[in-house]
Amino acid sequence: MDIIFEKAHRLIWQNRSRQGGTKLLCRAREIEDSPKMLSFSTTSRGHAKAIVEGSNGERYEAWLFITGKVYCSCAFFNDLEPFQRQALGCKHLLAHALRLIKQQKAA
Image 1: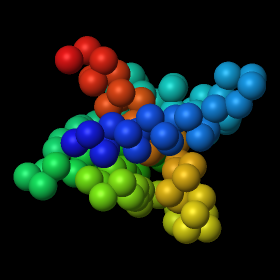
Image 2: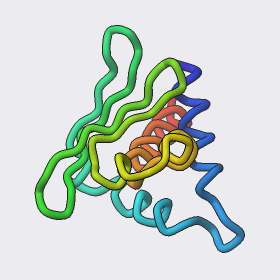
Image 3: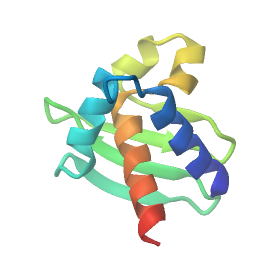
Image 4: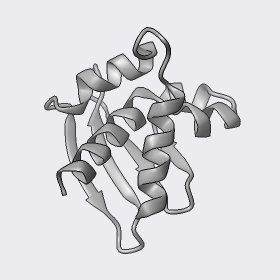
């Protein structure tokens, strides 16, 4: 699980700018504690999964894997170059990462 928390921190760090965050990170902060975060779970293998509601009611799966890789089923994520997918993610992955970090700090 430590790898997942490290990846969550890395995603947030890579999306920060001098002005306090990128547009993706700002959107993720709006989603993080909203009703759009439908569920969170951890698989038996330790992967972290979130179901996030999109702006038109669609549902996206945001995954942080114990290998350090990430995945989201949204079109934005799939349109990114492979390096950008892993380095920057999307607003759904960032919201999931923010929630994981918040849970880690509360524990």
